[in-house]
Image 1 (cartoon, rainbow, N blue to C red):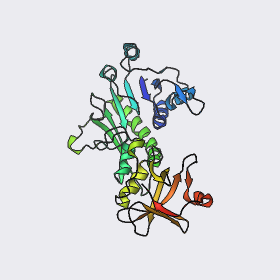
Image 2 (cartoon, one colour):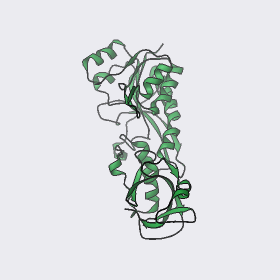
Image 3 (tube, rainbow, N blue to C red):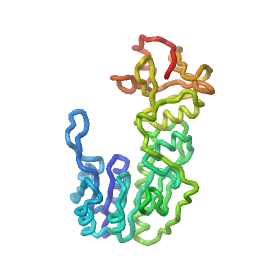
Image 4 (spheres, one colour):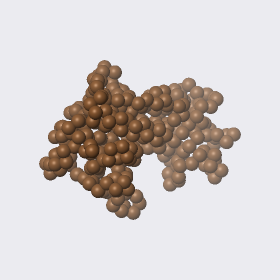
Amino acid sequence: MANIIFMGTPEFAVSSLQALHAAFGVTTVVSAPDKPRGRGLSVSPSNVTQAALDLGITDILQPSSLKDPAFVHEITDRTPDVICVIAFRILPRAIYSLARCGSFNVHASLLPTFRGAAPINHAIINGEHETGVTSFLLNDVVDTGTILLQRTCSISDGTTAGELYAQLMPLAAECAVDTCRGLLSGSIIPRSQVDGLASPAPKVFRETSVIDWTKDRNTVRNFIHGLSPAPCAWTHWNDDVLKIYRASWCDGQGAPGTWSMKNGLLTVACLDGMLSIDEMQLPGKRRMLFSDVARGYRGPTEGKFR
């Protein structure tokens, strides 16, 4: 029986843990320490820790520091055959070098494109029609290790980052299982990434999610969908912060940023045409379709976003 250690934290990694445990039996799970969550700030486990408990995995490690000699000693004592890392922290060499057959990460892009913390967001923001997942051997430079396997999928028009996230989770699980099987059997031949084809995918923040209406409408729409549902693209509307989750094409022209509300639509002008704002959220309100917002709206019917 293979000795597999799984490392991950968020929901994205859960399907892969479940699939690996079903295929091989994961012996140890490493995740982030429990922390306060929700309105009551009650301490609760990460998605991966909870999934491990649900699977009956009892050997769960939650180190504060991956460089802690005590943690390195714990992984050393477990003599792993394979370490699988998905949506976790950067592993030091002292950890990833311990796996007999190799330590690998499953990244949510077709490397070397979109190296970084937010590949799903940037695939949508950049208007890609295809993406996928890549498993690669860990090394000292983030997301640059030799490629083991890749699985591709198409991105349909209008897909949001949240929808692509859900689409890639089972693909990552499939890739993780096939990669683990290939490493254990020695059947995978790693291949180097072509650094000249690399593109960055840095973490996205609220501060950089404000919409620039002076850009063309395709760019603006991709930006909105690439940040939906989080951190969410936003603009100022009637002195409030308006979050926008989804937009669609519509006819018309106007000065960039000008908006109007008529015929049941909220439309806004970009550099080369108009968009209809389909889903939105005002301060203190829940996320809603514009049709629901319009029923109780009593403010001005035209203006300019800024």
